[in-house]
Length: 472
Image (tube, rainbow, N blue to C red; front, side):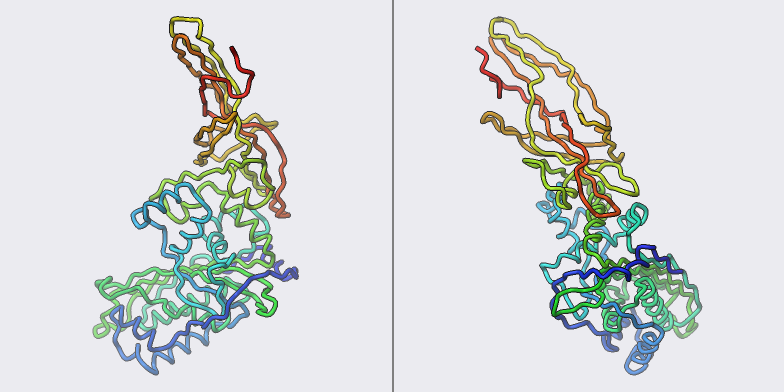
């Protein structure tokens, strides 16, 4: 049964145009020779998989599928979680620091292009990567729960069990997958897109993979385009539909003893369609603002420590700032992050031992954490770090602070300083200005709502003061 959100139902009531630069492409076709080869690869060589009979089978499938208005600018296969052993070491370092550019690069490795529609976004495209992030199951479910204007539709899991021939099983799989795709899009997809989607749905499967039972999972992630005008480079809507299926055929090669086989097909689909690019960007920022955004690509095989950027000065209230900052706990109406900027130091201790012949020791309790008007609530799954530097009075030094949910409350620790005879020492604590940046889920607007200071657990000792008058 199709489930459609209220936001998706309201799409037609908006007249916004979305600017998107697309290039003319040659759509991938589904033909009988190509499909015959794919079927032969899984050990099917009967007459039903060749020539005119197969062509007729394809036509029968197409007749059962309604033709809609949406087209595509790229059909992809989700290859699943990226594994640590498959990623070069230099790229792995970047991943662990969670650079957005690396995220897009990894998306290109996980989502492999399988077919073309009539249009292609090209290397400079701004929408494909965002759509891949939004359709990801974890992000999809997160946004479905958190925001009212998430324009989704989905067909929940459907299970089909039949005793049929192998060829009929494959026809059923094609038919049900195509129906699930078109149903989830609400508006339906055009014939060109349908052909591209299933042009190589049986590829990457070899007969040697299976002994007696056919058992394979596959999927397609299809970008969607509504009413594209190449002259103005605008469209009425942009989105994505994801279809996942799992087909099992018992003893599928045995056609002499029993032409009919127990067949089980599990299938589901989900889609998004945006008529406002600002809403798409808002949801993309929320998805990236989650603390485990790269885990949806790499799974648990890579321990991701996401990097929070420390800005030189307070940055503008926009999406770029939002996705580079520290996520706080959110509710249905807004999403908050903490922005850090203007790294500095403040003196928290000083010992002048220049008149003594003995080493002296000094201990001091120092508080670290957020000094803000209201409490800062961080997610219990927070695992971030900040890595920056401070320049003060010509002295440059770096600092690193791990950020977990323990920072939701201020904490106090005792620092012990030992100063040799005839020496003096100044103790400084690294501080940052901070501001809470809010994304309003209803309007898509970003705004700063609160300012304060963050006292880190990073300290620096010096022989001379960094900013006070020199002590003689």
